[in-house]
Image (cartoon, rainbow, N blue to C red; front, side, top):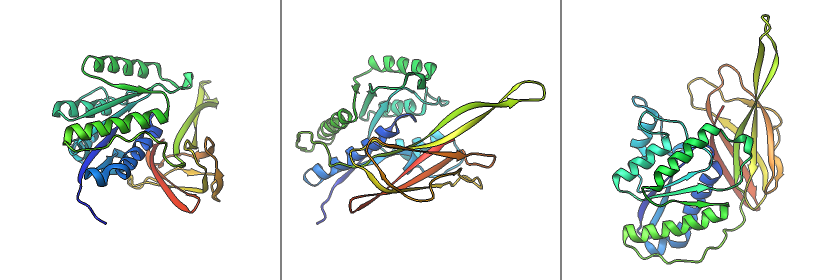
Amino acid sequence: MTFPATVVRVLIASPGDTGQARLLLRDVLQEWNSLHAEDSSVMLLPVMWERDATPEMGDRPQGIINRQLVDASDILVGIFWTRLGTPTSEAESGTAEEIERFISAGKPVLIYFSQEPVVPNSIDGEEYERLNKFRENLRARGLFDGYSSQEELWRKASAALTRTIRQRFRVEVSERPFEASRPAAHLLARIEREREMRGFSTSGRPQYTTRHTLVIENNGTAPAEDLSFAFESDVGDDEPPTTFGNEAPVKRLAQGGSLTYPLAVSMGTADQFDVVMQWREGDTSRNERQTLRV
């Protein structure tokens, strides 16, 4: 049965190293709606640039995202791990610019810094230093929080959104104790790069090539069955990369498991493309689209 509701747009803002947390926050918003939407007459709509931004020319990319998504959103949830992100002409990164824009507009900003373990040699030292300076700048301007596990982020973000909706929109929202959601697969795709020497030039200088590998991880709590994936690109005439070994669906990708596929990248390969993953959980079919860059 239908019911009237106020739609609140929640912008999920983060650099590119937080793909898993972005998907988790999307699920947090969906579960919040299941628990509270009918009683509170409020629906939380997740806003993500990789899904909701549409092609447009005539302005810098972040300016287009600001106009299409940032200014139209009501709450920002920002997450950081080891990177601050690529600088823009207006701010230290696209995520930082979105946060500054929200603060200037007087709209709610919820920021979390991940304290999850990371492989030391995967950290860019300069990038991590930029992030630390940004965090210290924020410390003098308000309150932010941290999390050391995905479950902790789920619990904290859900509670903070409930309080924000209650205070900002003056509606009654019940505080329900945190319960882990039903088991579900959470698939995260990424591209790993490895530089290796392939020989020497005629002048004796070393020559290098970059090996690209697609990695698909299941960071959820349930296996993904009959998993398949495909690449899609809308970037002019450029084609997405090709891969090897994915001719047949994977029967079962267990929770905590991962798959690797070598990629063939050449001239004419799109710099950005989508990977569309499809799988089954019991009798339920699921799919996920993620944007990748080579």
